[in-house]
Image 1: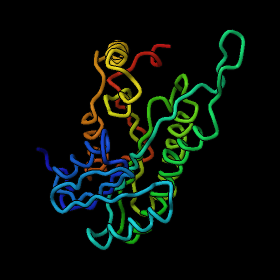
Image 2: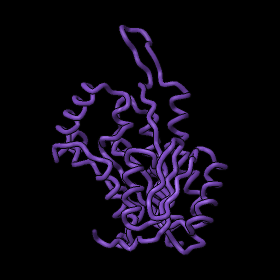
Image 3: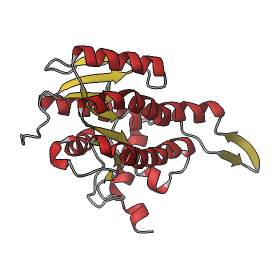
Length: 258
């Protein structure tokens, strides 16, 4: 394994109980980092002195308390990975046979905004003072390719992922003078528990086939594909990269070729 210069650094990964978050926490642990894994669900502490904390990223009190515990137990936070996210899909307005059949509810919209957008804001606001005091750090935000080109039935999710890109650029401007780099990773379609949750086995097989056809590399991504990209942006070797979104999608063609 290539030495990344991150050994013994303190890392926070939100949404780390499964999927991309879990893969990311494990990847940092392999580098010898001290990882604080956050999630609202039960999860696992990573080896090497890592800790697991139940944290609600939509609650400032929950986040602030968790940051204090990380600082006390592990030390100054060097990397924050804002990965936590949820889906509550639905069309803005759905008509069937000429009649209104449904709408995206306030609850659907607010839930996704709360976790995927406000959660990124809340966690970053809590961690930045620690990074400034320590002399620098790295913030990595989970966006998505749908934040760049939209997606049917995902008004709420797309709004958050586009918003994350905007916040990334603002924070890079504001925090660069403190030697804090801020970037976003924009995955394409990734085989995660969340992606599979609402599909039967046959539906998943069809989704995987269709999404593979849309990628230049002929396959869908894995959580490890994203965790490796996150690791690259976190490492000191990427020390002059900030205010960027790194697309990791296998070369999706449905928006490139339009």
